[in-house]
Length: 300
Image (cartoon, rainbow, N blue to C red; front, top):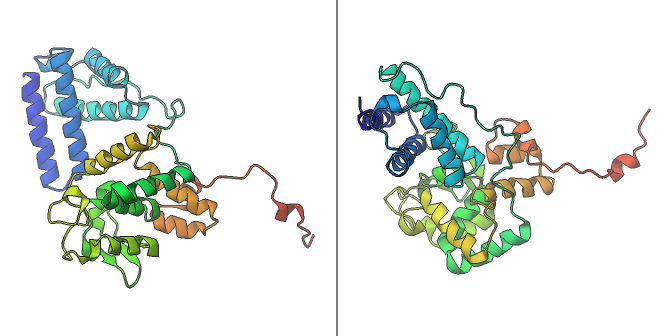
């Protein structure tokens, strides 16, 4: 079996998994992207003609290529390792290999690497808002939904005008659109509603996606990559740190809510966290003494 034949059969397999609803679109897109990079690696660095050449040495060298030469972070390297494990399992299941060449290859421990995404200082958030209001007004609405409503970029590409209830100040994310497959409703701050009205989002037909091409409402669903492209434009213009990613706006928004002493349950529900323990991760614990506790004179 040639390697390319096996890779092509795997592509057919994941396309079938997507069409039957077993894979989410982002999972399918991820595996397609990993395959593309692996083919580029084979073409540039390591000619691989037959499946038996896909061995442990290939996997280790490919992961080094991803991590070192392509200058990706540890999490990305671990994501590629997970893909190689899944791909290896497919090859074994089909009888193209006797064992998985990824066995014994370990991910980089999360305790050892720095988080690739950081919260953004609030003064920088304000600069981002000012810049987007002038240069990227439609992208600013996406920033608002991420910062105040914690809507994931993938979910944003699937939201339609009819999912917004302006009278009740709510946004409902149907289960088939969300990561956790649950239908959930979050609160729409007046600031977000007013800005959406200002740029004409809610005058579009009810079944239009709120973000289509050029991030304006339309009939065509777009790839979440559009948000990253616009964020890269903002990042370059404002010379932001590479650790301040588009998704950092969600982390920063949750942290600001916690810092403002909003009820943990309210933050949990807005962020659609499965438990308060996850919400508590975003809470900055004060290292100084609490004055109320210092002066506490209880019943005992």
